Length: 526
Image (cartoon, rainbow, N blue to C red; front, side, top):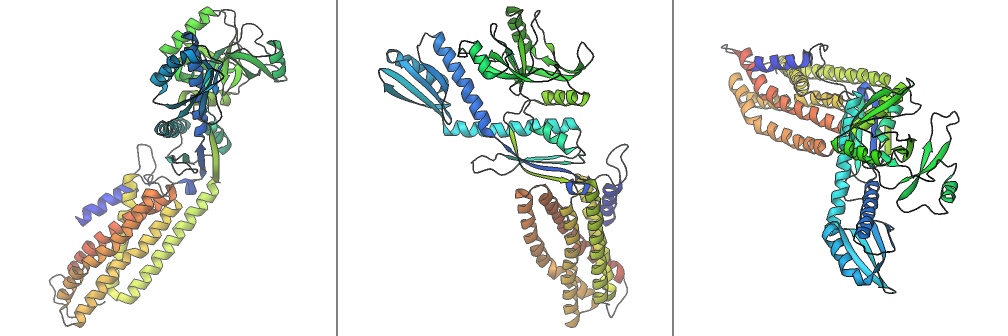
């Protein structure tokens, strides 16, 4: 059994991880050893809440108009509320019934009467608010995971961690080893990539040089159902920012996007082609057929990228023009494919580790482990003489099992992980010391060598079990609540402790039996 355990450990430590991989490749290096970027991001969940409120306010206004229920204004109020003002009190019951049936699960509805008109205030209910915040963080994590995988980063770490004074954990830790262009990665991660197609106002839709010019061009007030968006025509040399008046309700949103890829425009310049799903294709086909001759604004993150004229009915395949480089077109296509973030991300902490610093860490960690191993071997042999060699073999076996286990599970090796290995080396002799001291006591009491060895192992087992169990409990808490590097330390410490029990209690006993054999030994070198 001992030979089988060691053979399996050697295989998983030495053999390549896959076809074409180098030897000793089963343990990928972590961020602090390979170099890369570490980010702590906060998901600004208020963005998703505000978007939900704005959409519901728009929906309520349209529904009230369709039911001929007069009102003054429907808008997102201060904080997390929707305000409905100046509703005809004679139709108060109809409005209240509609709000209760369609929005009662999401909002608490309060009303007040002023000058014969009823005003309503809708605010998020606690359970729904928490559910929306949690789903926003979860969707952000899934979107980031798709983007990181599309980048081809090996062994990335993404996990929800901590909060910022809220009940919901809204922070995400991102660790990307081997990244050599951190600025590009940060831009890709933070970009929300909200794609929308909005119809430009048929008359006086722009472009205008300023916002004031857009307002004046529309009679001093932007009509209901329209908004002003910035527009940068990258095909112009000065690339100045202009403004256009577009529909408040997008014709197409990111949820209708099926795929995207780098393409070229009619001039052969880099562009981004995108493909809509069946629902999106039907919507764009119907809208374009009704608005031939109008302009359709392609909006990315609330900024118009291009606004071509609709010359014919559009289909599922379309293109985004712009003065893209090949890399920018590839990145934008990647963002659109991976999906839009439900809210913006704020970088709370950033740490970049260079590859050269990672190599220095590896050398320092390996050197510390070798020095520690050498000192332990010298001390154990000097104190316990020939029996100390037994502990040395167990120590080497312990180290081999630990490395084999990490290779088998594909554990990422980090600098704290190396510290865990160094600590495991020191702790590996603890059990041997307990056993050897017990054997010496049994020898002093007059027992024979064989009886003293058997008694030493049998009577110390539960002491060894207790001491290692308490440390395992601490390691379990480190793994449960720690971040990536702390988890690496907990994994190596746990594996080292389990290997320690096996080698000290079982392997060491078998080595003593093999050493004693059938001979009658009067004195043991210990």
